[in-house]
Amino acid sequence: MRNNSPRFLWLFEILNFLINYDWFFWLIGKFNSRGWIKSVFLSYPANEEWERKYAYWFRIGSWKIRLSAFLRQNGKIVPMFTVFVRDEEFFKKANEEKLKEMIQRMEKIRQLLRADEKTFAGILPGLLAKRKLVDKTPEADITASIVAEAIELVKRQAGVTGEIPIVVLGGKGFIGRRVTDKLMVLQKSGVYVVDLNDRDKWPEEKARKIIINLARYDTIQLYYDALRPGDIVLNEAYPIPSPEVINKLKSLNCDCFHIVGVKATAFPRFIQGYEEGNPCCSAWNSRKKKVLIKELT
Image (cartoon, rainbow, N blue to C red; front, top):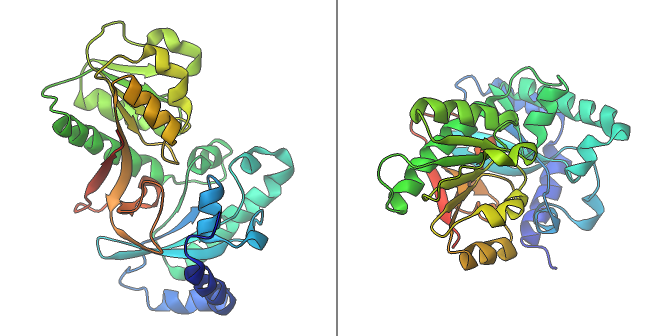
């Protein structure tokens, strides 16, 4: 597979050589008194296509934090940094010190830039909170808010009026608990938390349902037999469901939507379902934020 944007890769190789230093971040921070840099965001590649989007082959597998994109949402800038390791590397005991050094480095960059927050992609917020490596987790609250709005957008787009049963996959997880709590307030009944160990909690009624995937991107495959025609699958997991999953949902006569995140711009642009906005985990909680969803089926 060829690189998606080789000219951008060259550009960011040069930028990292020139400006990826503490003195430069400190200098930019001196001009950030008005808070135009809102936060710093750390990502990692979920698959080969994401790797090739943001790194040449000789960078893949490196824990070195590198500047990889600039995000802009509601008038604020969010520099995006990336480590080029897959999520399974974060769980390995042999990499524990590397994980700690990664967090410390992101905190140092945040302080130098005088940004309000640092945020992390994918599984990192929950993992870091569980290991007590971070004190604040802004990703969880903003994601819960975005998911709640996305449900209302899906209902309108699918022609659903009133309340509808909602199944939350991964509802006991780090993000899932906050989403579930928010849904319980918005909808007094008909919210079902389903994880692998309590599948019996899947609602028995055959009425149309919304199934929110807050677990791994491939988790929905474990519940094909529980889906009914007309059900709506809403994916929040990173990355976007594969073509095989989307085709399977089509064959089951289920609708599938993906939560893009919020309306924003990125340079270079995101891929695989995030082209028109920025993911939930990179967003900041502006009152003017616009939630985006993408229909996949």
